[in-house]
Image 1 (spheres, rainbow, N blue to C red):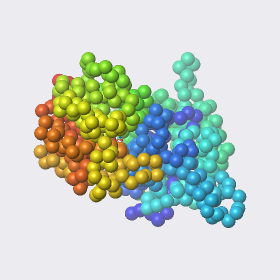
Image 2: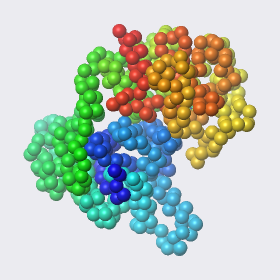
Image 3: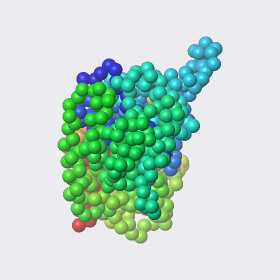
Image 4: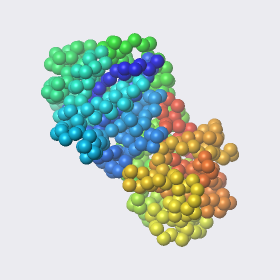
Amino acid sequence: MASKNPKYLFVTGGVVSSLGKGILSASLGSLLESRGLKVTIMKLDPYINLDPGTMSPFQHGEVFVTDDGSETDLDLGHYERYLNSKMSHKNNFTAGQVYEHVLKKERKGEFLGSTVQVIPHITDEIKKRISIGAEGNDIAIIEIGGTVGDIESQPFLEAIRQMKLELGSDRTLFTHLTFVPYLASSGETKTKPTQHSVKSLLSHGLQADILICRSEQNLSKADCKKIALFTNVNEDCVFTLPDVPSIYSIPVMMNKQGLDEQIVEKLKIRCSKPKLNDWKKVINLENSQKGETKIAMVGKYTELVDSYKSVNEALIHAGIHNGTNVKIEYIDSEMFNKGVKKINADGILIPGGFGNRGVKGMINVARYAREQNIPYLGICLGMQIAVIEFARNVLKLDADSTEFKKSTKHPVIGLITEWLDDEGLIQQRTEESDKGGTMRLGSQVCYLKKTSKMAKLYKKQRISERHRHRYEFNNNYESTFNKNGMTIVGKSEDNSLVEAIEIKNHKWFVGCQFHPEFTSDPIKAHPLFKGFIRAAKLKSK
Ligand code: GLN
């Protein structure tokens, strides 16, 4: 039963970034959900950009797309992989959005001429968005991006300080994730950075209730005691989060230390004991993985693996459920501009991407996978590449996507407005979004051909998957493709858009216009990724 007055668990980070606040928040959420509570998680991003949609994957990692078509921070991907509850546009906002909203109000005169200030105007807007996101849940975990001490995070810390004052300690709890380095030369664990970080938090009026200490190894009792003493936190509220081989062991590990018990006690929540069977199953499956299946991931953002976070995780999930360790090798597609000699892999994956760079090499790679009968999964851009390759080398057409070459003779991939008449449903799908483009975004229904590999994998024909793209397969070529061995196996609900292709005479060659990686989780794994890894594993034998 969801409460009318949600409780708030705030998660901040200190000392250094990249400690895994997102994964910690997701693990906490999952523990609380497993106790029968209705949980949501929000990510508050202190940067000024209006959303991560237009940020470079090199800087910011993947853009995660929710069912409702919001382009959000990749941490929301972690939340969905650990929780049953689904995220929406309400679960992520940036300082930029807050300021934009307040400034628009100011222009409309809604502040009646008063001076518009960080406190209370910006902080009020932050608090309002937090409570809208939390609505209908028993508990909302609020992850504040960045590290305590950053200039940008100050209004956010101030807002949550006010929330504690307004709602009291039965409804608010502060968890701080910090780093405890180990100095190998002296053989010592150093608690000073943590002491400073908690002090810095205190200077914003926030006393940490719970500390989670990231470290290479488990901290000793003595270390925890020392940290507790210097940070004014109860000793039994100092937890340690050592490096682990699998991020999916964290919920059970934190439960063993009693973290969720402390949280429900402190927030005075009455609920059942956690049911962790699903997580224990995942751990068992991970422990019994044997051998290696090599996947070559050929893309253009390969320098930062976070750019393909959800694809990486989906491959790992599929490995867990196929009893094999998936080893991903990231290869910059520009390496193959002149052709492919050999790719040493059991499967090849071309993920999503935008723009012209690297496309030449990708087309060569798709050809290699097709001709060498190597399992191939093409996601979004990866499907479009496979289509162009097939059109050029099998159908012998001078084909391209109009994204890469505007005046191509055979636009096998193009903007729907470029190749369809201007009537009908299509137009409705390409409304200008406020992101300055015509992006097809979010969850949409797709129908699969009964006889397709995909329908067998999904075990159904009607599926729903998330989209994030502008270009589409050009329907004018549908029958030519079908006749020549690349089969159109998936269409949109109204039959107007191509959603998926397969090559008939091939071990496993699948392309989809949607992004299946966004809906994969470790407990079930995604059918398409499971099928891909199964085929690759067979090849590796
Ligand atoms: N650039 C392509 C398009 O806009 C593919 C996008 C993607 O892979 N997400 O359609």
